[in-house]
Image 1 (cartoon, rainbow, N blue to C red):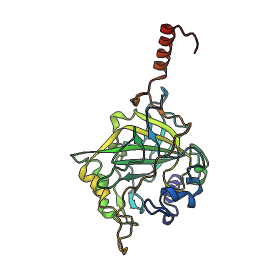
Image 2 (cartoon, helix red, strand yellow; image 1 turned 45 degrees about the horizontal axis):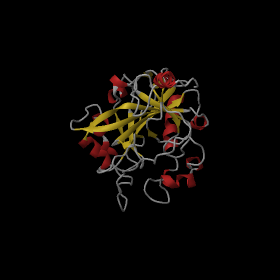
Image 3 (cartoon, helix red, strand yellow; image 1 turned 120 degrees about the horizontal axis):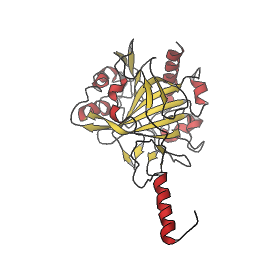
Length: 313
């Protein structure tokens, strides 16, 4: 029961005071969020998300495969798909958890949501070497030791978010259809529909789940709590152009009876400076351009010493 309550609380927090923030109006877009939610101000703290992933990262050989409990099972009950005016959220209830892979504890999985662009613009929140993907999917998990969201927000590792880039191909992703086929039922803000549970692992690049990047950051929507252990997977999820279009053209940020219906597009927060944070590549991840393993750097330094006769380190 506590897990189910926590799931609801996380959804409420991620949607809290939704009338006070937006993505496109100057008085409430991400650059103005700090006026309503002080913790969203980019100068308060140095652990904001999203960031650009570039060659300034280090290999961490201790970062192996995460344990995704229940992800390969069909959970009981019913899930809920919802348009909250800022994203499409899949509320998954209880039954799944994330641990291992360097995470400091067990985290209960509570919801999945998406970020996207528009018909002509990519919309992932994180970027890779400056490249923005068409979409990004976040699986939100809360540390099991916390009784509520407020406690998790006070913990720098209170949440573990698994981020997946989404790219496009011509063929439909049959597993992603569990969600895309239901989008017409949540086209407008405030609409929700039941969805039959399915193995969440079926959405993921399960042959490449040991390849990821890790850093400490924040929620990317208000209240922007700097309490997230980010795991960003290297290999994207692939969906079709038509499945992408269902998000970029057929989801609206306004209610169905609004005087002016507004498409929900480009719902991503701007990039933030990494500052002194370390971004780690897992044991099996590909290092980005210009990055070398610590052992490689040491070998190059030793070669420099031998060739040039420099005996200092």
